[in-house]
Length: 574
Image (tube, rainbow, N blue to C red):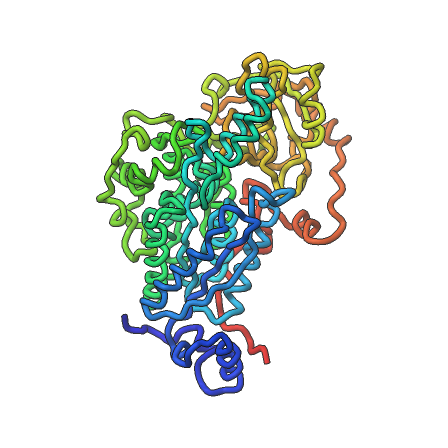
């Protein structure tokens, strides 16, 4: 393909100046031929490989396939590491570091001689972090996910990542499962390379980048260990070189219509509530006006078609065999619920990518008139308890609890919850509403996945399986239940959640999108005068985070990171 302009990397490698000599000479210590620097596209492979991020531990091998594709297309591949966010190991929460990792990505791209970028992602926060950072630079960019694990299998039962943990843990508390059996399930749940094979946050975000048009078709569902994942990697390497020649930048793809498509797709797949935060943050970086209310506007009446855990029965392996995300998008498009002309990294429209998709299993990807949930998507709730909004995932909730009034049982912190929830004398019954405070962006800090509070053991033993739970926290995309999350403003920021007291009555009305604390404004004002904010961290990164993080309704990004800063040529270093 003909080159259309002088490439960005030639500001480093082109010419015969002292600076060009330095840039080329030190690169040549890796054995690179002189013609590597002749003006061909330099492709950065931004890799989140880490043995501390189990879902991404296979990305080194996948990067080699990407390099092969880049070389075949006439590019010059260079792999570089960025901060990896392992959901299963990082404390207090990987979300605390999403914005930091995005800064790593942004500055690594801008500071180096790159013409295009491949983002290698997998575990939950690695996908949004890398897309956020790349969006701030706006080079030609393509995403490649690591793919989901093979199905878990424990004693003949198909079990899903995370979802089985929550269920088995509750069974142990209720006396229905022995601890030895619980321990034996560990290796059976995670038995291959890849990310969670439920429709948790990793699979949701892999679906979101495909729906946004940032990844090749079948990126979301192809298993990590399937040979076709390697093929996808090689094709991704080829395609990014073409995108550089076409100057197909990220901002030409991630436009309002792409976000509208992604929101609808999230409803159809029963996707994670975490997608709300991440898409809001990505939109803010790229300069697209997206709000929390858009999640209701575009997603409210979308049925959940994909029968996957935690909302349904199956896992990502079956989703792939059934035809994957293109089938879902075709179904939306046939009903006027896909903005068909949205451009994608293929250079074609989203509709051209999916119009021939076939459904090979209508149990896994259901027909439109037989959905798993008639109203999927994300419910955005408002009221005096959440003036700036809160979210709930209807497909994972108990229908009987979607309209509910109950007495508040209040936990001031996660430690307070863990200490009191096991107390057999705790004054709680199935009609109560469990309220957890100080677990939001500032309060935890980092907004940990603790919102799906486990139920009291004494109620589990009675056969209770769900209760209304409300917090300013998040929950794992693999979790389930009638759980209200992301309450904004959060308790630590002085939101009304901070004022809830034991015994207050709370009304949840999901059909009417209402979340109301039945306490007079005069009483709330009196409580506000008594409230004092928690002490913030005194120094270090957590202090920077707490003083700059936005609330959940704005995506919990740092305020100073909004907008594109581009990838102009920096000043010389010597």
